[in-house]
Length: 434
Image (tube, rainbow, N blue to C red):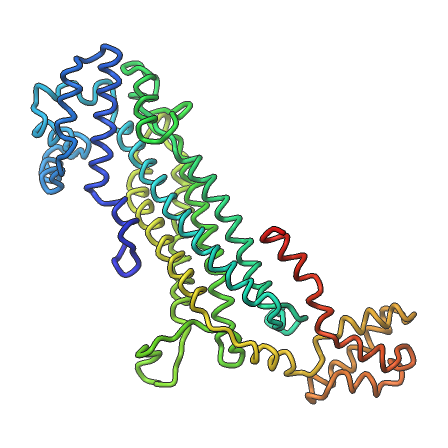
């Protein structure tokens, strides 16, 4: 990923230095296990650990790979340069390249998942704080972009909290599913390496042994992992779109924080644009783009081919780095987001009283009017409000058919905002607990 959308902790997971360090640990732990089994001399296994503090030379490994055309062999050759060719002769005993590559990739994905889980926890804390702050801040709910009925800003934040809480559960499940390793040799039969080696290496790296691998770890696990990242990205966009709509000049119920010295446009000095949430919409597209190739990686030829390899070299870093950045950015947006309650009330009253139409409809049916007649009575008065910006309640009070069924007091009661917020506590208890 480009530095603009990257954070250092996640980037470090995907650096060549980190990759080669994990490769080294896989090989060294495998040597320990084979020495315990008496397959290789103990002194050779111990000699491999002489490189435990070595900073592997990426340029040197690239130089060797230019000749060998094989990245794992290039690394093993470089390792022998540090350990000694005689001492290193049992390294990679009975193993195949995918044992190193796949196990390393899953270590990297589990570490990336840990960062993403922490990101989600931070975002949830921000959403909960803003939900509690605006629990009873009334705003108009919209369907199809059109005024529907009153809700609260707190419920909007709570809705996003519940969605991201589900994503946290999905991310934890995805981490658990991807945290497997395989040291099973060519085509996965353990013909040249004992299964206890796999168990030892996985234990040391915080993984569990893959129940059955071929020459690779099954890619349905990776498909599920990247699909989870895609779902989380879609939820980020869901929140971003809402904020972008709220910041529109005609709405202005909420907005991104605009810092001192910030400029919104090179041409128009008055502009305050929702650039962060627009950026999040774009980043979400990139994360989702990783899901399809990850799913296409599931189908490989026989026990293994490498059609998945080039894909994963790109989507592994790109998707996790981008999602990490997006979650952190969204958390910052939520933390600093400006809320304008007065505008919420003004918007709701743009067509005075109109959003109470369903209450009047229900009251008329309860008073004995047929639903068809009640709907017609309410709609004809509502259309006057749409067309002439009159007051809905006054129109109803002037309609003889309506007042024949409902008293002025009964009509007045139908315009109580508290009616729409009476169950907010119940919903909050469902989302956040009692």
